[in-house]
Image (cartoon, rainbow, N blue to C red; front, side):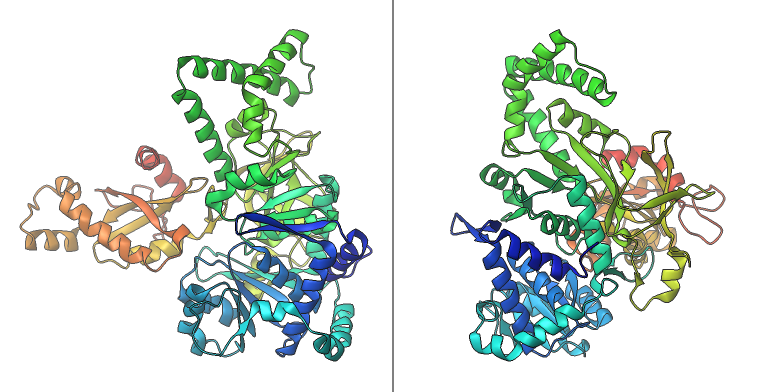
Length: 595
C-alpha cells in the first residue's frame, strides 16, 4: 500500500480528478454538483478552521448529525490533520450523547441544528474536555458560545498563511497505525464500547472494496446510511479510493425518489430497504388487477428459473432465454427503474438478508451481493462477488483477511481490517482479540468446500435489526425489569424491522395492584389477559422506552402467564434467560407480533 493515511488518499484523488464530479446534494429542489477541486478546497478550509480552535493531531471530534455532505466534509477535515472522528447517532437522547462525548474525551463537536444543540447544552457541564461547539444550521441556537459551520468552511487567505504550514506538517505526520475514528458499538452488558479503527484499517477496507467491485470515477453512489455506522464509513472509503462520485440522499423517506433522480450505478444498503421494496413491488402487482398479477407471477416464475441456473453456473436454454427477455420488458425493467435504471452493483450488509429476497431481485436481473463483517473488522471481511456468489452465504474473504473456525464453531478473523482494540477498555479488548491478532467475532459459522462462509448462529446476544442497527437486549431488559410488576423480559428483533418483547409478571405485585383496582385475582391466567392489566404493563414499557433511542424501543409485547424458571429450562443457573429456548418455545407469539 503506497499511502500513509486516508487524508493522503483523499488529496491524491483531488489532484488527479480535478474537475470531475466528487459529490452532489439537493438544495431548493435542485441537485448541486461539486467537483473534486472544490471538495478539496472545502476540506482544507474546514481543517484550518478546526486547527484555529485549538485542535491538533490525536484530538477527538464528535459529529452529531444526519447523513449529509457536512458530515463527510467534517470527517475528512478532521482526518486530514490527524484528528479522530467520533460519530454519534442523531436519534440518541442527551444522556447517551453525554456518554459518547465524555468517554471519548472529545474536545469538539459538530452539531446539526438547534434540536441537537440543546441536547448537548443539557450535558455540557458534565463533559469537561468539550471546548468547542460547531453548529451547521444555527437557526434557533441562542448565545455566542458556538462556531458557525459555514463561516468556518468559507476560509480566508489570512488563515491559510497563518496555519497552512502547520496543517501540512500535521498531515504528513499521520502514520497508518494512528486511529482515524472511534466507532461506538453496543455491548451485551453495560455501555457502548469505542472500537479504535486506524488509517491502515480503513485504507485496507476501502482498497479491497473498491478493487473487488471495480469502483471507478465513472461510478455514482447514493449515500443514505448513518455515518456513525461502520458500514457507511467503509463504503465511503471505497468511494474515495475508487474516485466515485457521491450523491447525498435527502432522507430515508425520499430514498426511492432520490434513486430515480440520481440514477446511481452502485447502491449500498441494509436488508430492510430491500424488504420494503420487495413488499411494495408484490403489493403493487397484486392490487393492479388479475391480468397484471398473472403477468407478474409468470415473469417471476421465469426469472426464478433463470436465477437458479445462473446460481449453479449453468447455461440458460434458448426458449427460457426468450421468455426471460419478454419478462424483462413486461416487468423487470420497471423494477430496475426503482433503482434508477443504471444500477450495476447492489450490496447488502450490517444484518442478514433472506435468501428469498436475494433470489427475488436476482430473478428481476438485480444481483444483490451480501457481505459479512463487524464494527471491529472495519465492516466487511467477506463478500459475494458478481462472478462468484452463493445465496445463503456471505461470500468469501479477501483483502488479506484470514478466517478460521474455532473448536466451538466461532468464526475467528485475522488481517489488516481487524481493529486496534476498545478505547480505554483493555480487558474487553483481551476478551475478543488474542495476542496473535485473531478477533473472536461471536458468530458461529462454517466454510463450505468452495470457500464460502455461512453464518449459522450467534454466540453474542447482540440483536441486529433488518435496518442494520446493533441493539444490546440486556440493557433494554434491565430497564423494563425495573418495574415491580415485571419479573422477566426477553427482547426480540434479530433480522426484524422493530423490537418486541416477551414478558412474565411478578405475581405478588400484580395481584396486589389488581385487588386495589377491584379486579378478580383468583384466576391468574385470566388476569394476565385482562385489558386493564395490559394498559398498566404498556405504561411500564413506555417508561423504559422513554429512556431509549428510537431504534431501541419496544413496539409490541406479549405477556406469558407462567414465569421463566431454571427447572423449565428457560433460565440458566445464574438466572439469565436462555434466548434460544424461549424463542423456540414461544415462536408463535413472537411471529404474531410481526404480522
